Image 1 (tube, rainbow, N blue to C red):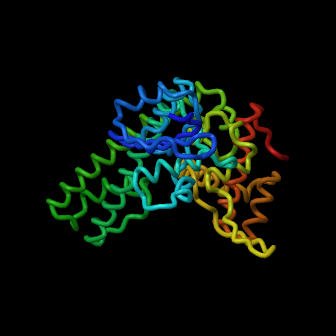
Image 2 (cartoon, rainbow, N blue to C red):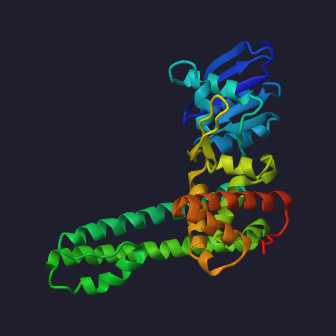
Image 3 (cartoon, rainbow, N blue to C red):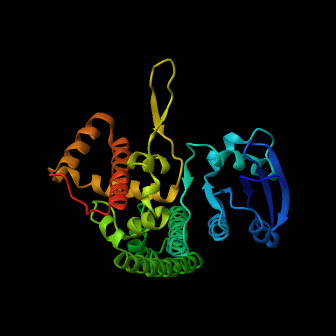
Amino acid sequence: MTQLTRMGIDVAKHVFQLHGVDERGHTVLRRRISRAQLRPFVAQLRPCLIGVEACGSAHYWARELKTLGHDVRLIAPQFVAPYRTKDKNDGNDAEAICEAVGRPHMRFVPVKDVGQQAVLTVHRARQLLVAERTALVNQSRGLLAEYGLIVPAGVGALRRALPALLETPELPVLAREVFADLADRLRALDERITHYDRRVETVARQTEPAQRLMQVPGVGPVTATAVVATVGDARTFKNGRQFAAWLGMVPRQHSSGGTRRLGRITKRGDVYLRTLLIHGARAVMRQVARRTDATSRWVMALTARRGFNKAVVALAAKQARVLWALLATGRPYVACP
């Protein structure tokens, strides 16, 4: 085989597609192999640049292939798609990955170690339980409305209302039994979420970078540990703006003929981190009217000009830049007077 210098791997559960090129960009490898064959096959190759789409099990394979001496890069799916010039199939996907990984300005996903993956596993389990609780609350409110019983939005409102509602004569006996079961399920979910919250708090106490990030207003243990576990080495990003762009928190550009137009944020990148930062910014927004620091004054002025929601997004993007600076420099947070 001609010397292979760059390879794209389309990862799946059982069968993987490989596409490799030489230093001139000529295709020298097109191969479909099983999961069991992948590591032995790559082990007998000379060290090269390998691209893998950031999907399920990608971080595991990146770690495995790195131990074999290869330079492994993970690429977000939305950055691979523009390089697919033919119909979508495994072979064309591997070719697109191979092309994308060789681009000089490509944005890569940091490879997570097993410790980072463990922390994110806790976050994913908690996220699943929170989503289940939200669905249960919405379903319960909808069912209660069928009996003319209206409960305000929110977990706390339903939690407070259920004991009295279970005694109301408007509910038939059969319906009361159902709502009693739903109330038990809500309590069980609350307990499990609290359990994971404590686990996250423990991780935050034991992680020095997370402690520094928690000094930033609106950043608690959940956001801090998620950022540290997801980002890893913040120096992989050139600056805070690149980090914010990686999170999808910079505006889209629609520019032509020298005219620059900015639209809504791109919403590319990690949805979970972006959501946490937005929620944190909303929490800060509720307090800015009572504060006189520079950030609060800036937020108040921006809210007056652009509205509440745009100010929330702008504050979240600003905090993303601050979090990057704290991680990249190792310095403590210092609030502006």
